[in-house]
Image: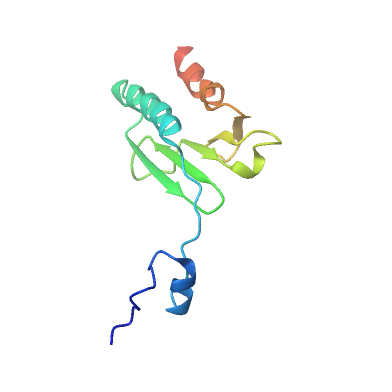
Length: 122
């Protein structure tokens, strides 16, 4: 006799509850177009020598793309997607190293301009 019954699908949340395993919580993620736009910006900044490392966190309430100047430091920018704010201030925001929100909005391209403009004004 196995632990799994033949008719139970392991991906079914009710089957997971019967087996004592908690079902997976839905996570907020960046879709392909959003991630493509962010990684294009990241690639340009790496080519310019400004950025060196990144991290992506998919949490249950928000997705975060963190940009580092060096891997051992705190992130200089965090690009955050929080769907709970989509109807209010906008789902996207760019947060600086000090935790200050630099820009927030409904469109990712417009929010990312705060990073592009800051480095292009040299």
